[in-house]
Amino acid sequence: ASLISALSNTPFVPFWTPGKHASAQGGPAAAKPKDLVRLTPGARALYPLFGWQCSDEGSPKFPSAPFQDEAILDILCRLGTHPALSSSHILERATSLSALSTQPDLFNTRTGWCQAILSYLGEHSSLTSDAALVQSLRRLKWIPTLAKPAGYIFPWHASSSLEAPDHLLMPTDIDLAGSVYSIVDSRLTMSKDVMSCLTLDLGPSSAWVADQLLRIVAWHASNTSKEGNPRNEALSHTLSRIYAYLALDKDGTEFLSQVQD
Image (cartoon, rainbow, N blue to C red):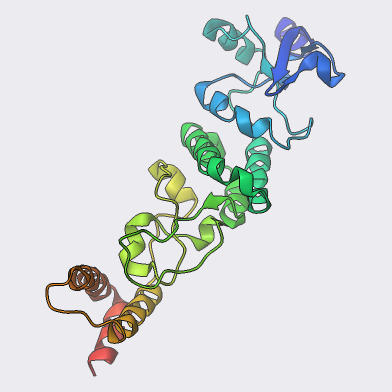
């Protein structure tokens, strides 16, 4: 135990941070095992984020070659190397994404970077079970939103290019609330656990769906079309989903009763 403790606190492992070399940072050429993070495919996917507007304090330290062998990494973890990036690392990178609203030239990369964070969260339950991290991620504007789909004929909810999970719905909810609420970029994928911890699995409230219905009715009143027009097919499909949703919801049933009266 004393040997493990001594090795854990001895700076003998060459390290690097994405986009930087240890010697170029003015720091030591080696780090203590307990100050390192295990290198994984998920961590590699986050390299671009750690190389962009990242402070030295926010940059994780990874073991350099030849200390990237899985067997050696197992030993380093026994000596205190962290199996995953810290909550502060993830939050800082998500926060950096929110700055993209002022970086138009980086808009095309934001979805890939966001996906890297979502995937990493899905691979490490220790992060999704961190209540403080999850609460911060829910309120932070770091998730790319969906632009109005070409085939969506109804009014579209105008939103910023990045939004907080607390103010987003999944693409499967477009028919139910696309006119009244922001939608997650459809190119993003996430595990059920991540979707749940970010509260993206809750779906729209009956009030939002009822509002969607009213807006579609108003739109239809000013956009009449001939029988057989594809618009009528889209209208029929969307209304069917809305009525089915409201009929299954107590508040929605009350709303439909009021409309019928």
